[in-house]
Image 1 (cartoon, rainbow, N blue to C red):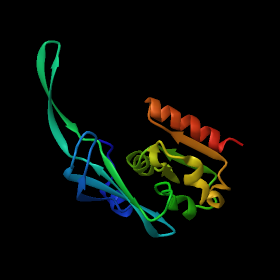
Image 2: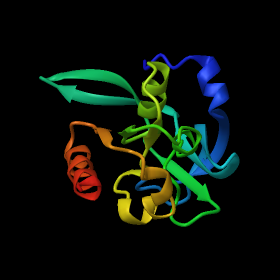
Image 3: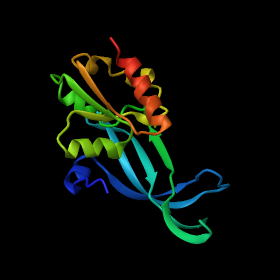
Length: 173
């Protein structure tokens, strides 16, 4: 539970929807419950990312005993009017042109958590750890110029550490 205030989620355009989504290994996909993260550039919605929050029951053998778990099916779909997608919440950087510090996260929920704690401006890379940062940030170089300090908040898995390394290289001057 990341304890993102409802007011912040509403302000950021976070919503819920049911979307037809195909997850790994599925032939056809099905209707799934999703959280929708809307992203804005200069006040206009430029893309939306749907993240599945559908749960399912799983039974596994652990130490010779059957264990029952509820897991969230991990899946997402992204629709964008821009290619590549803009970093999530990039408008916060445009709205704070004098800011010398920028917080970058791997995902939208992480970005919202930082915002809830008062860390601004905070953005998330456009497509998680696999984002091509050079292409994603290219259209926003003017907005990035005043930034002197970049705080990168990646997950501790392999992809998160790779993202941290790649972003460090990108912002190295």
